[in-house]
Image (cartoon, rainbow, N blue to C red; front, side):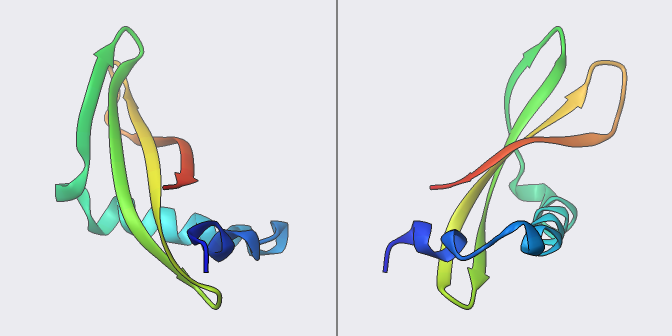
Length: 81
């Protein structure tokens, strides 16, 4: 089974599942957040985590930013590695 198959079965109806997995990863794995670039927009981070669905498991890369002058982590992107 291909790792993309894990998320291929997800539809818009499953958006809450993906949203919760992203929130859980960001909340419970803060020590795994890796800072990348800092620019005029803020500090960028990457967090990889395993997502398991009925189809199997895959590593999801999520990209985050803390905007300059703020302290709230915001999701910018996510995709399967």
